[in-house]
Image 1 (cartoon, each protein chain N blue to C red):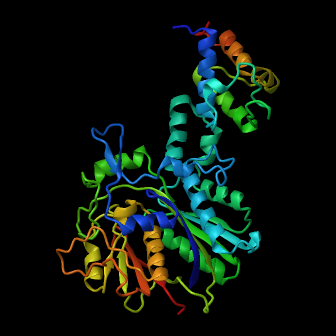
Image 2 (tube, each protein chain N blue to C red):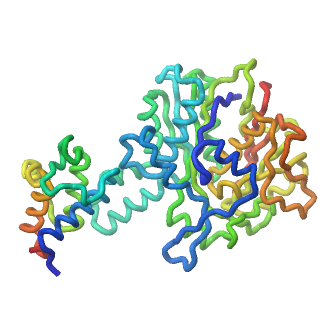
Image 3 (cartoon, rainbow over the protein chains, first blue to last red):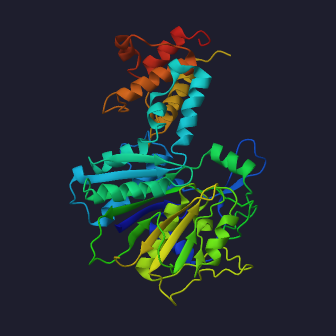
Length: 354
Length: 92
């Protein structure tokens, strides 16, 4: 079990979990459109506004950093500075970064440099930033932490793995605090892949609870980090009470059907048996570590007692969709993700210590 | 088509700002004689120096291997442009 102290976030709606929360309070708005070489029409995408990445304080001396590192650093630093954990020893503070594709935009730039100019003329800056641990390096440099640092890469369960490692670090008392989060960057390659391989709806509105075998995806980018400690049973939650474990029926089941992991009909049995089903992908876009954002929203709902309406509300099946309002505060929320082979992973968010 | 000295200076300033991801500085704000690697100049550091070497290789086919010579060449836009003009075949 892990206690969440604070959340830092960078999303298409701006900086902070509050920006996403505000967006979820209102009607759904379509994402912007970006031009992709080789694609005739601009494609919808949930991109992070450039002005969010121009913070001169947090991003000081980071002019060489790419969007992956900048988004991760802002989200991680915001989570840390809001956590009240700044007195934890730097030697006992860990950093875990989960990502599906890592700094792939920089990686392709580095590879293009080799192809275009030969290996004797590659940029050393592109090389050093093309490694997956670059973002974690910037975070630890900025926060001056010296504890264990790891970047976990997986197309489906990177964030789940990060939470498992965080729990181990804390339970084994190697760390007293861990910053764990996820980051995904949107670049031309990802946009191209989505445009060619996924069903990108023209209006930019994915239908994640349609349980389709040909799901829609609208690519997104962003970063979300959680400041975590061992649980204090007297503290107010939220707690991450279980990673990859089953348990009693949750009040809300969030399905991370983000459109990038193949057929989504496998979610239907879970949804049919759930008291209330939700998915918030249409608010931040399809990402391989989108379940980190779903967990952040779950934590926000558990903490505030509010329910954010699942968007869009398909409604045509016998599914109880999570509605907006205060009528019944959720105390337990499961965030479920399936991979292409149907393997299921669950992250349980609880209001109280169990 | 051959470029004149002023065109090369402008090109070098554009390349510096883009290649080194310089923030808060526009190419035209870099003075021709402004020290590139001093705090009271453009303020580039040693990693930028390596990037400038790569920039000259990629854009002008010039290979700066002698670091002592590099210090002289990299003093300012004027010294860089002089080096390009004298050593890159397609420029005058």
